Length: 117
Length: 113
Image (cartoon, rainbow over all chains, first blue to last red; front, side):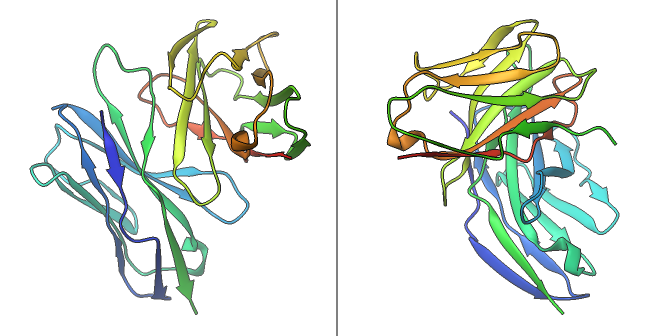
């Protein structure tokens, strides 16, 4: 069975600074997908960034980038130039690849990020 | 931009009662999901639904749970006889194809007393 672990329940960062959220996972699968979702206070969860395990290049979306270390089973999220609107709960998630994939997401516990002015 | 909607936003029910949580997925999506999050814990997968049938369900999704897409627009989660431990936030999600982004609803907070 796959598991996802986020070891930082809460983090804070000053506006315009950079912050890194950690995520580790455990799986015996070779092909899979990893995601970071953001859940602002009282709002829907939205996708921030995704990474295909077969791609060595780290995914980047504007100020958001990941550091994917497949051998270490680590998938951290870096937020550059933090903005007040980045304040949210961030979830790391895993999805397996292959014919048996139903789209099921396995989530970590979440990290609450507070961006301070 | 299209959104997934869920009703009600908060449901309070007594133990043993039946509840139906409703979701309206994005109209052209084909894959549908329910997740739940007990306060302070991780988001957990409950069930996936495609082509009018369950494609996968978790251990949590026992005989007390059922899902239905009765009219091509709504996607419902029914809990037949609620327990205290069913108290949680329930999220619906949908996507166009399996590897596409899942769009989440705002959630229904279920409180069982």
